[in-house]
Length: 191
Image 1 (cartoon, rainbow, N blue to C red):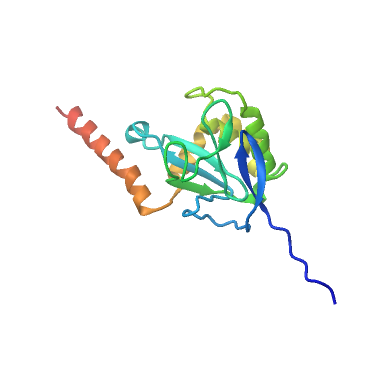
Image 2 (image 1 turned 30 degrees about the vertical axis):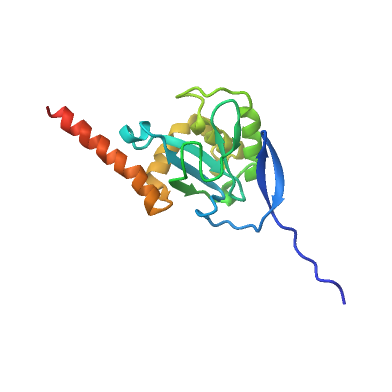
């Protein structure tokens, strides 16, 4: 009787100098570590040196609804490079619930936070990747909380306590230097 219609494919956002270009992809909410897709996730990777001494400190980013990871490295937020983040592959992640977005949509909030981050320099401890992720959650009023931008460092605790490790090798890359650093600190503190 009639031709079968096909539902439109959801899109993946590709960053092109700060703007999104939409390309089709089958939509899934599941994390796909092999393809570096982390939908509705806060993702984290260690920062060599810093993380070895302070295991909860690392580089934090956020995944769009289709799993593309957006990161802030200063002077704007962009799509993370292929294969992980600027400091290495994603090591840990926390997947959030899309039904807890209280204002707009997940991607709209990321768009707004990226626009706010444009031209903003990295400020070390005050304007950084944690601030960017907090700004995204603030824009979407995640869980109805209106002040995520004041809670940016709690995100580090959240990922440290609740984060899932992605793979055994990535976990090893994170844990071995931490254990060695703590062993060295203990040895030198008892001399």
